[in-house]
Image (cartoon, rainbow, N blue to C red):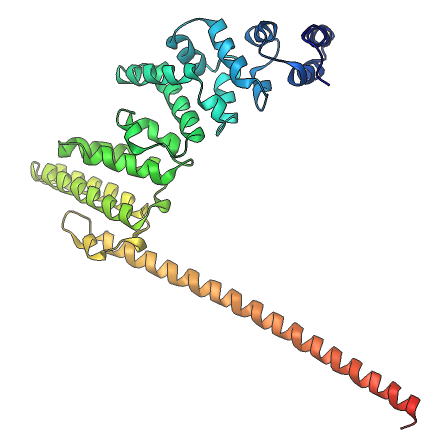
Length: 325
């Protein structure tokens, strides 16, 4: 039975006055509704926001707390960026919760955060990334077009949520760059933000295409230099491309000949050969393990058969002794 608002609030106040915070939270979780008295308890941090995880009135209460802190998207952005009363931690804890992810206050703040990120506002960057993750976790069928104006640096938040989608959006943003030099900068800076091991064959093929573009720009930059400076830049480009290629599951590349392109370092083909060797070794190890297991099971079966044969012979002897044979 859920206690009335007056009874519940009295119990919470008594518990808080006595320092019994766990009991106060328990009464809040069981009895709190969307009433203003409960909003005040949260807004004033007498009850932590973490209590809202899984609460039946979580969306209503959180929305009212945000309003109690002040009006406007900037208030929400600041609260998330500064993790006011654990708000950002609450968003992370509630990943996948459609009620929290669908709050209008967060949707509006996300739009403003994207604008603020363009102006390099620190709060906008921190809050925007948290809001992006929160929204996508609750809406996993989000179309790629949703990310058209999302800063590329925020895509790292999707790394473990939707790795394939994150790669698609990243690749689209890089390929959309008209200036080859800018595309190279983006690829160099953000390549490590994605789980390339989850890439599909088509994504690996597209990634190699981006790396060829990167390599071409690098080669032209080297051509503008001479002597030691040129050699230093050539080695830096080769090192960056090799590291980027090493992140890819090259064994899934539909057309391995693409790795022989002059824009790519000669180590590209070696990386593919190593990937194939590793795959063969892995498959061999797995087969050996299966064979060892099969042999063990066979030995166990033989022992069981021997035991059964012994039992049969024992029963036959008993039968013969009874019948006098």
